[in-house]
Length: 361
Image 1 (cartoon, rainbow, N blue to C red):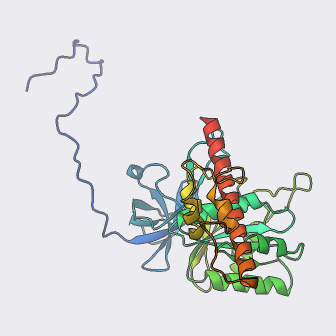
Image 2: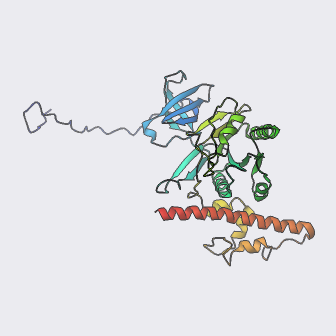
Image 3: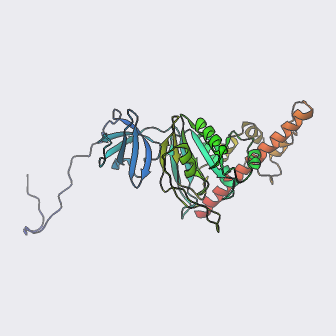
């Protein structure tokens, strides 16, 4: 082989080696036979994983080839490395299994209001935690979370905390037409034990995620559901009426009756930039069928003069009811009007999110 001409005879000159001619292989290792685990904790680049074949918990890092953000809470992953779970040992996440569901929110609170954040994968239940007082409840947040839950295919549960401070009747009435279970809880007294027991039975055997504003009682609820969880709790600022962020990382806790519940950091907003009108209408099939009579590009708002939802709510042709008469007809009218009002409220939340996203572009 001829000696490479470097252009100088000075031995002190270091010349970068030439590019090899052998191409990099495209064959990737087969990780399908490696042990499976479930991500139950994420904190500063370290992943706590519960092995499916045993009760062992290991700390793992993400393989470089997976890319940043490729592993989220709830993922089922393939592992290599030290799987003993001993202190000061690390496993390596080398593959992520296909997800059955992904709960996401748009980053409207980001500086550029763009992008999405995946919160949890492979969950089947979303607990929307709302305080009846201190801080006061916000229906906008509930509506957005409901739309995100339906879009992700999660069963929503509305958990009303601090039931000893205010009456829940108004909220129960506002969401009676939604396919959502409502559970009342409080931190003290017999009502606390009854509400927590009802929620624990509802979540048994499921992968659930808690979502809500800071200060609504998510960490307190975790401590009641999982004795020994020892999640830090805070208080609500008397001036701003908002809670402080006490949970700074996502963590899943195993319930005594089986199943897991994920505690997430509190959020200021829940963006819906990834959700469309069809996702909202899909929640109410009868209203979606009525919306098919609308003109193209109809916003379905109450201000739309030709929106078919108004005729549907008033039982006008072609949506007239069968002549049942009496209380049955009145109940049907109230039900239709309530569902249309719910759909419009959710569509307004989606439109607001879309407008914010467009303004940031």
